[in-house]
Length: 183
Image 1 (cartoon, rainbow, N blue to C red):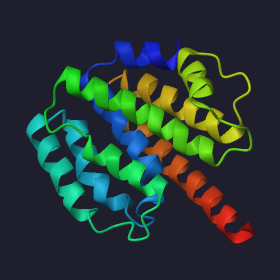
Image 2: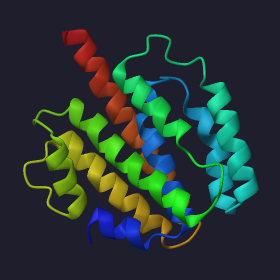
Image 3: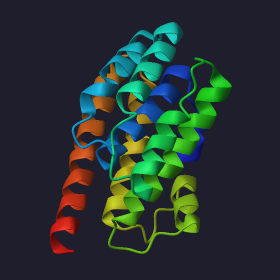
Image 4: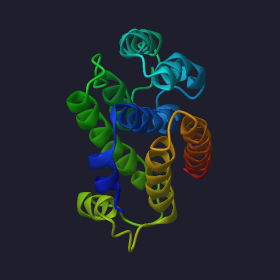
């Protein structure tokens, strides 16, 4: 099943987890040490608590407001992902946010990939054709699909989603660090 199909079939909890996981994996581009900031948002997803979700998202925005003082384009895109997180726990806003986070996360990973990544290649990957995707883009695509598949099995799948987010954040952090050392 393609990533687009998985997003189309996802429920509210899965959509919130999907968007949050994308944000979490890309967070090192904005705040290298900011991983704990999203913990209350993950807890709200685990409970499926819309009220706690809105409060936790607002608190994360405030805590990350001063992060990324060397604001580059990548950090700005991560900030936009967080800024676009809906305060409302509802299907429509969460679906729009999760889909947008998916595209942004793939584009950000594509920036650091060995292969040239275009908007067209990202659209192909999301539609199920990962041919020609470099290792970083392909890995992010797999993580997004696995998060949606895991969370579809209920709240226990959130642990797997968090593990994938932690792993993906480490991978991205390492690639960015390596690029900075060789530049």
